[in-house]
Length: 437
Image: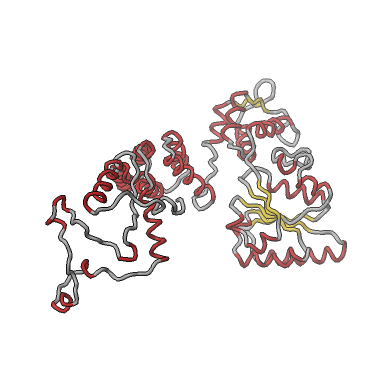
């Protein structure tokens, strides 16, 4: 059922729709070297084959998983000979090009530059990270999107009717079609493979057609096709969505992304570690109990493992999502990092140093230090603890949310009545923010 031309091709209208850039290039017979980036089953291989056909080029397809440098050199050598004899170009299609290492990608580079081959690479991973910059700069990157349910439905209906497919030999119920479309998750290959498997196991009825219902489709699919790679983009994109949902106080979305990761086989300890980080980074002292619960969830996950560990993970997720939020510690640490990098590293003030020897005492170590417990409220008046060059700097500026509101009131009272200073200076920490996690 692989489409033979652009008119049969379904999906990716932003690339091959009427008047779109890739379609215009193919129709003009001018196919550039390009990287096709998108999820499985969205038409990367098909587009490459159609492009080669439209440009009357030889089409050679290899997989980066099974091919090496020797095969690449052989293909390129044949391409150069063919070009010299017939002036016919070669389209070299490398599936999963992200699995080629730097040396393998470098082999192709000079032949792409001089036009011996037109490179079409397909990848499910972000080419910015997985394809050499030199090769990437000589190729156009086209991003393919998951197919919509209507597009998958059209592909399945064509397969049911077309002689190249099932040719009208299968009677697929409406609910089976709906289930097949929904669970294929935008992957035409998953839908067609499941349809074929369900049809193969069906017994023809009196009318000669094989009846296929929802139960047969479920049996063929077994489980939803999740787009997730624990070492790739989906890993980082999904944990990012989870973190932002918790930070945005949306427990429903946070639970959704949590279960997406768990269902796809993500390491539960990775999730637990991120929950602990969230407690400190985004909840902070607005709810000190958040770190306790997050740490307990991490320990429980380590103790009991999956599948039961999703209970403590879910509990911590909901607690953190509903907790008041404060990034005051994050801001303060960002200011500290800046000052440590940009200001003079002063020695520890003498009055803060211990004096275990007579010589050190004679040099002034510990002289004038005020023992906090000797004073009312256990705070020594007018005592200083920062180096002179950083006197008056404020790294912790609490918000007025949750439990941090009480800390803010206490801190302002300490600064006003005990240390003789007022509220934090404008811009001390609020003007900068460390990079978001």
